[in-house]
Amino acid sequence: MTLTVRTILIFITAGCLTSCRTKDSAPAALRPDPVRITQFYATKLTASQGEAVNLCYGVENASAVRLTPPIEQLRPSLSRCFPVSQMQTTTYTLSAEDQQGGTASQSITAA
Image (cartoon, rainbow, N blue to C red; front, side, top):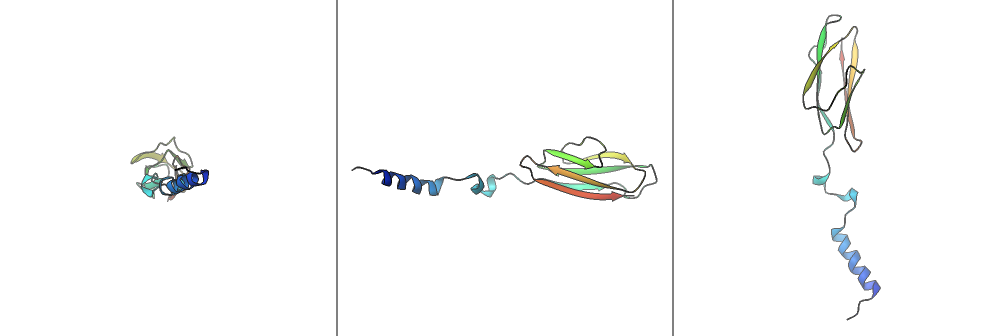
């Protein structure tokens, strides 16, 4: 029995339809979980002028974390708090990014 080139290509194509996958067709179980902000809050939303309050945050699946306005260098953490002293009402925005370029952000305002 001899196989023609066309027959071989049909076998290869048919086999690939059931076993070949592109990057976009990977099962959901193999895709990384998206970046999430699990918590972001101030221990006091209203404080006396110059009084320190704690900002607390938690992120999942993040490779980088930023705070605007910048207070200090942040790192991904499941749960972390740090003190801030503010002189006026301030809106803080926490942004997290994963290695695939996905982002999440959340804001709070402390007076």
